[in-house]
Length: 170
Image (cartoon, rainbow, N blue to C red):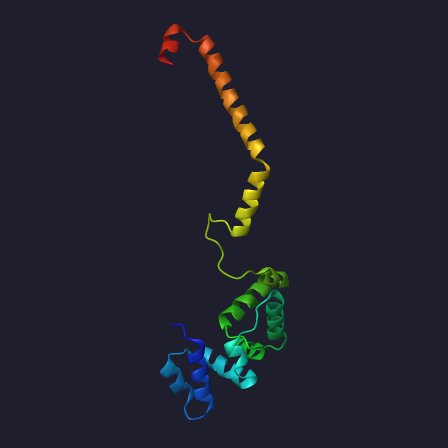
């Protein structure tokens, strides 16, 4: 599916709302998925242009209220999106799954964006690691010095016991 600008969305919804054309003809004309277009039309009918131009701010409380309302009213994802003026049915589906698996705290902790790939740290984790390194640089230096000193002492002990031939090789 291609990305559709806000102006195009609004133009398509208003064209359908005028009543001159069918839902299917407008969808095909602008290349919009059926489910998405039905949600946009429902939001426009209930709230007007507002949520199509400026979607609601998504917070932990918003997600929690949305999922609770959906489950209490046994509503479909489309009905829930229209009720809250939210345009993304995929997110609603994921939030409900997360709520059912991990509980309401999971929705409150949820952060925007993708999870980092394996082996990569997030910005917050890297900040914590760098601050820990800054606070303990003397400890790491000391550990390296002790390790190096121990290695040298072992080398000296082995050289004291070595023969002249072994000393020459070293």
